[in-house]
Every structure is written in structure tokens, then in C-alpha cells.
Amino acid sequence: MAGYIAPEHFRPLQRIQFFTINPFSITPGQLYLHENHQQDWLVSIRIKLKIPQGVSRWKLNKSGMAAFRDTRLPSGNFYSMYVGNPITIVPRLVVCALLGLCSGVSVASGISDPFDTEALLPPKPALRLGGAVGDPCAEAMPNGALNLLDVVNLALCKNPQTREAWANARVQAAQVGVSKASYLPSPSLTASGSRNSVNAAPSVYQRSIGVSLSYLLYDFGGRAANLENARQLLNAATATQDGTVQTVFLSAVQAFYQTQAALAALDAALESERAAKESFAAAEARYTIGSATPADKLQAQTAYSQATLNRITADGSMKNTKGTLANMLGLDANRNVPLVAAKGFIAQPGSFDPAKNAAYAKDGEAEALEISGRDVAALIEEARQRRPDLYAAAMQVKAAEASADAARAADKPTVSLAASTNQSSSAGVTSRGSSIGITLNVPIFSGFAPTYRIRAAEAQIETRNAQLERLRLQVALDVWTAYQNLTTATQSLRSTADLLSSAEQSERVALGRYKAGVGSILDVLNAQSALAGARQQRIQSTFNWNISRAALAQAMGSLDANLLQALPDSSKQTRKQP
Image 1: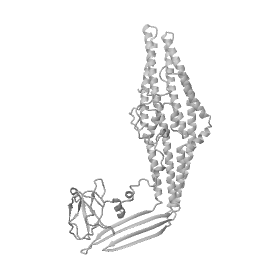
Image 2: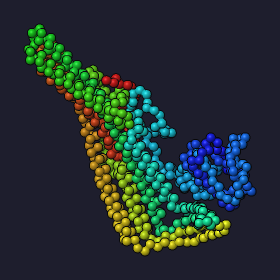
Image 3: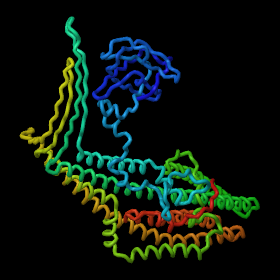
Image 4: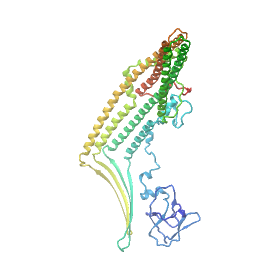
């Protein structure tokens, strides 16, 4: 044991006592105290100095250590020292183990996971493309515009829902370790010391120390049932994490495409406002030269004002969707998140290529036909094999069954091994003793509590089975709904492509006729209104198609990075942010 106490810190604020246990002995010059400002607890030990002389004062030696010197008090007595700062006796672990002054947590603080429960945990939620290793969430937010892969990965890494699910899985993994600990013996150490005095009689010093051990040998399956319950709950927590990941995954995809749709809708509103302004200017010019009536001018002006109002509304909706996207990524809603340029959202005039957009719709229809070629019943059965929430419910049933087994075993006898050894000393007389034996504990009557615990556990099994059946039906409904939505979205995608093409041509013809003086302003306004509606329908159908593909994958339990790579908007081309 080594250390020091600086003289300036030697103040009578806290009393530290020392004692010794045979064959532990201390001689002059060996006892030092070590000051440690980072310690927040005091070791209280009392030592009987077996020296020919007593202790009288402190003296600082050349090495800067305060030691016992010039001892003059009688030896063989107990002495106390007063220090003003926390101290540590080195080696601390040995002293704590011998004297029983550390809890089991302190003794085992250097062993973080002796049962290797971390190996049972699922990976931390994140996208791992191409067999990537390491922590994909360690990198900061990517610079520049975000594509769909970036958005989903940030959502999985930063969204509190995924972090909560992963933390819950770690909690259940730790509970597996708690259950495994019941298979190990439980040693404990006790120590005590006292001084008794009556009137003028000499003081009598008493001390004792003992070590005991208990080990459960057999409990009719109680430990095994508790361990099985913890394992199944861990499986359920792991599956719940997978389900949460897929939910956040889909929400991130929806937020991404919703923002893209809102940006495209704003572009479409701006273009409609520009066209309405052009029509109003044409009507005003014709009215000035006397070739148009005041009604034409007023109708064009009304349409222009309505287009401006629609643009203002679209701008507000766009800002709201961008706030939703930032929130999904674990950011403040006012944080601007730049996105790549969208594919398939047609807004600007002249940007519509019938051949390209027909091919775009045809590819989507081909994909939908490939899916529809499969039997829906087969899709439902596949989903029931893959859905993580359904698997989690099944694990909850098994955990409830294990809990019922544990409740039945709790009312049965247990067989344990018990061993102990102790030493006590009083008035100079020392005695020692030890024992070892088998203990049989047979519960006789507990007020019918075990009976009702078993009934409650069995009712819990029925509850979990009902929840499992409800989820089985919900999976079928989810697959059927997502399948029909994808079919509708694919057909709408092709129809809106034709609608937008004809609306653009109609608007150009009507405006040209009006400028030439052979058309009416009503034809122009109707054509422009139809074009604005076609643009919005095209944008919405594209959004619905992309989301429907991801929703069906989520309903099937197969939403992963492979689907993202098949979806559009994975390039790094930055769109102009309004």
C-alpha cells in the first residue's frame, strides 16, 4: 500500500479509521495515504498498529510523503487519523474484496459484458450499401443536395424513433444477462467491529468477519423459464426495431417525394401564374385597341389573380413539407434541406417529352404488371413470413408461455448449496467456524397467490395469441391495399402523361388563336385552367406511384436499400431551391 497526503490538505474534517486482519500486518514506515481529488467516496478502515511504539505526530520526509514518525504511544491499540480530502487505499480492489467495503457492482466494474449479450443485438439502424462496414451514422450530414439514399440514411441514423427502438433492444439484451446470472453462485462478505464499555470497566473490543456462499442447484425449471422469457423478449425487441426501421424508412421516402411534389407544384403554380399574366396582358392590349370587350379584360384579370393566389398557397404548402422533411431527419423544422432535382415531375413548358414520359410510365406499368402477375394470396403469405411486426408478436406469445412456466415453477421446491466461514474476536479471544450443507425450501401455503399468478400468465398467453391473429389479418389487408394502390397509381401515371400532353397543346393553340384575333378569352382561360389541373394531377400521380412502390415493399416486409436504388432521384443533380 502506497501513497501520500499533502500537509496543506491535512484538516480534521473527516475521520478515517483503519484495522488489520490476520495475517495482515503493518509495520512502521509502510502505512501511507494517497490523496485523489477525483474520488467521491471515503474508505473507512481501522488498523491496529503492531509496533513497539505509538504514534505522536506527522513529519514530511524528503519524497514529499507524510509518514508515521517519532511514535511514542503504546502499541497494540487502535488509532484513528483525520484527513480533509477523499483518500484511496492501494490496491483498492484487494482491500475492498477482503473487507467487504465494495458492492458487487464496484468489484465487477471492469467487466462490462461477461455474458456477451451485445452479440445478440441487431445492427444499429442505418443503410449499409455494398457490404459497408463500420458505423454509417458516424459521418456528419452530407454536403450539398441530398438524394433519396441520403435522406433515408439520415432518417434512420438521426430519427429518435430508431434510436429508441435500438435502446429498447439493448435493454432486453441486458435482461438476458440478468437471467443468466441466476445460474452463478452468490458469494458475500460481512465484517463488523465495535468497542463496548460499561461504567469504569475496561473497554472490550469486538470484531468479526465472515464469508458466505449460496448456489441454487435445482428449481424445477424456474431459471430456465425466466431465461427463455428474456430471450424471446429480446427477439421481439429486435423484430420491433426492424419494424420501426421500415416505418421510418417509408416515412422518409414519403417525406422526400412529398417535398419533391410540393416543389414541383410550386413550379407549376409559377408557370400557371406566368401564363395567366400573359393572357391578361394580351386581353388588355386588345381592349386598348378596341378589339376586345371589357369583360374579356376583367375575366383575364380575375384568372391572373386566382393564379397568384394558387402560387401563394403552393409556396406555403412547400414550406410545410420541407419542415416535415427536416423533422423526419431529426433536425429543426426551420432547417433548410436541399434536395436533388426530381425526375418525372413535369412543370416547365417545353420540358414535356412525350416519348420519354411515355417510356417512364411504361416502365412503371411493366413493373406493376410483373407484380400483378403474381397471385395476391402468394404475396400475402410471403408477407406473413417476412413482416417484422408479425414476428415480434409471435415472439411475444413464446415469451408469455415462458412466463407462465416460470409462474408454475415459482411455487415448487428449490434445492440450494450453502457454505460459510467466519472469524470473530472479543476481549482477546479469537474463534473460527465454517459450515457447508444443502438447503431444501418447500413452499407450503402462500395465500393462493401462486394460483392467481398462473391464471394471469395463462390469460396473458391468450391475449398475445389474439394480438398475433389480429396482426395476421392486418398484414393481409395491408398487402391487398398497397397492391391495389400501386395498380391504380401505375394506370394513373400513364393517363396523366397523355392528359398533360394534350393540355399543353390545347393551351398553346387557344392562346395563339386569341392573339391572332380569331379566338375568345374564355377558350384561353379554360385551356389554361385545364393545363394547370393536368400539371397538378401529373405531379400527384408521380408522387403516388413512387410512394405506392415503397408502401407495397413495406407491407411485404421487404423495404430495404435495394428498392431505393430502383427508385428515381438517386443522382446528385441539384435543383434550384425557391
